Structure formats: structure tokens, C-alpha cells
Length: 110
Length: 123
Image 1: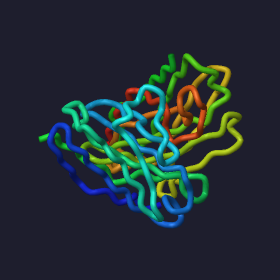
Image 2 (image 1 turned 90 degrees about the horizontal axis):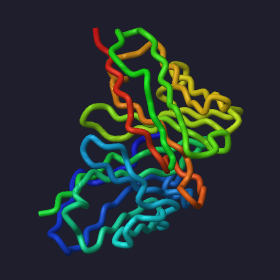
Image 3 (image 1 turned 90 degrees about the vertical axis):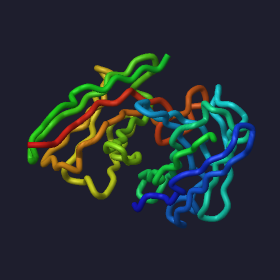
Image 4 (image 1 turned 180 degrees about the vertical axis):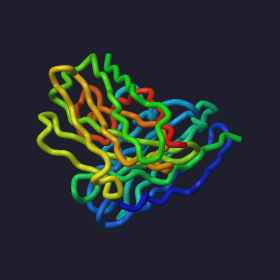
């Protein structure tokens, strides 16, 4: 149950697209299509942005998209906006019916 | 509207115990998996445990097995986390979450979250 690996930080200018990677193993990311992504602003609870690799909950902007290849999942934010500046965490279902979160990525809008 | 409200956090001495509660409203509590997730100050999210709707199945992160116990009371629409033998490294904000995506009901680690309750383990 080691944390999934994410880059510590990613930055981009308004309007640009950025991608955040999330690397696990065949026991979590690679073994199940149950990867989700969470956005967290300082002092706030996490918010679900993507579930089951690439699905968006109702109300989440279509600027957010997800994908997966092998043991690595990715979150792409297109048309970057200032309000996208936050921490982002991936999460995967894992063996033994547990979940594991990623290490987290701080997104900075330049 | 789904509402989750944690309570029971506070300052506890190392080796002590604490029980967190989460009051749920706005949905049929007895129909959903529920979970606890924690976040140490300045650190990332850590999944702690989840529990089946009827309480018959509970899963824990390996590192906390034996010290933490998740439970629920469907009659009171409440989720609990009993924590014992607390250590400084258990200091964190503890969130309760409903394990379903709103509208679709698809299973997920956390579809709706409470604001969290802070537990501080210190002498």
C-alpha cells in the first residue's frame, strides 16, 4: 500500500494545458479502472473531479479529463484558469478492497 | 443535499484514545459505503478505512490495522472511528466521506466529504 507517485508541482500559464501523472503498480492503477482525481484548495475538503479513470461527476468542468495507460494515470487540465490553482491527488482502488492516494501535485497558474 | 459533519477531534496525549463521529444527512445513509481519510498537517491524503452499508465488511490501511476501528449506526445516520494507542504521527485532519459519486452512485473512494476534524496527539 505505498502511495502512488505524482510530480510535486506542475505549472502553466492561463489558457494553457497541463498534465499530471500518477504512477502505481499492477496491484492498483494497472489492475483496475478505478482511478479517481481530487482537487483540494487550502483549508478545504477534497473535491472529486474524475472517477473511473475518465468520467466527470455532474458539475465538473469539461476542461478536466482523465486517462490511463498501463500503471500510469493522468489528469489533464485544459484552458488553465486561476481558480484551478490547487493541490491535486489521484486515488486508485487496490488489492484487498482498499484504496491508495497519490503523493499530491501542487498546480500553480503563472 | 448531502451533508457530512465530523466531530470528536481535539488534543489527546500519546497512548490515549479518541472516538470520532460523522453525522450524515441528505441521503439514505444505510445504503452507502462510507470511509475515513486523513491528512497530516502540510502532507497528502491518506486513505484510512471503509465500511459496507450493513457494517458486515470493513477494510483498513495495513499500517493502522489493530489500532483503529471503523463502525456505523444506521439508525443514527452516523459513522465512527475509534482510535487507540495514538501516536504523534496520527496528528491529522480526519475526513469522513461517502463512497459514491453523486447522482450515478458509482463507487469511489470519496464522492462527498465533510469539512474534517483535527486530531492533535501531543503531551
